[in-house]
Length: 304
Image (cartoon, rainbow, N blue to C red; front, side, top):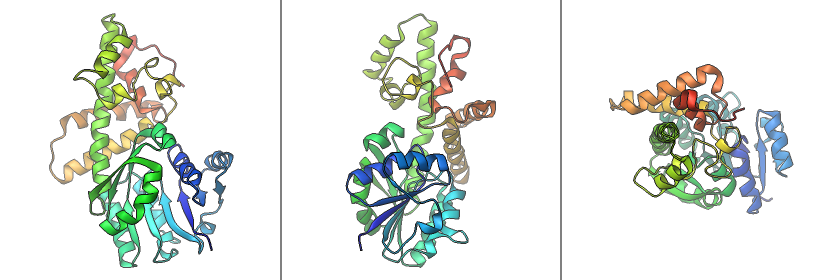
């Protein structure tokens, strides 16, 4: 019997990740609660399963999940009909969701009790990174589980990091996205200041890419259109990584900081800004659209 990968959660990130596994010759079957996402996956020639109960079959040797929040991961793995009680002990579990550390450890502990290897492996790099298989993947788990997962992770990503024990992947991702949320606001402030000063934004952008003010939002994912092709700002801010997801990650960072008594003043301000932006109905827009908040009356770009 040929072995297969069960992939749960084929949204903006999960679908291209599953597609890259398929293109690499892996047998992949996918499930999502969204019928729309399943139809998109079908159009990509992925094998879709419309009922989660039918996904976990004897041929499944790896389960990969890419879910929005910890409550979803917990339900899928540990719920009444959770997959953790349905897979074989030889099955590898890879949770690529960005969730709270406690939930990640709780799920992993249960898997370990059953003799099942599991890693948390959240990703960074956005939809473009998922499509191009250039994701950064941060892994938490045992060395043995990490090494078992590595061949699959290398298909989906470019830079794979073993951060430490289970939960460390999510811890590293939360730290990364805290910095990213702050950096996107900073990039927006800088470019909008250039606009108000009547300096050519393209020239300022080029200078910043090659100077000490460079950052990932500047060099890869700018918050204003007309600077780098293929970015959400050039597509009416249709989400690659939504403002709502960034807001969620900043809340996770805030929770972690409080638990360990860490001082994160800039992250706290970033959370307030994204909170307000999402409360005003912008949660589904790309997180780079935060430039609209910064830009005020000088911001005049198309947005869906």
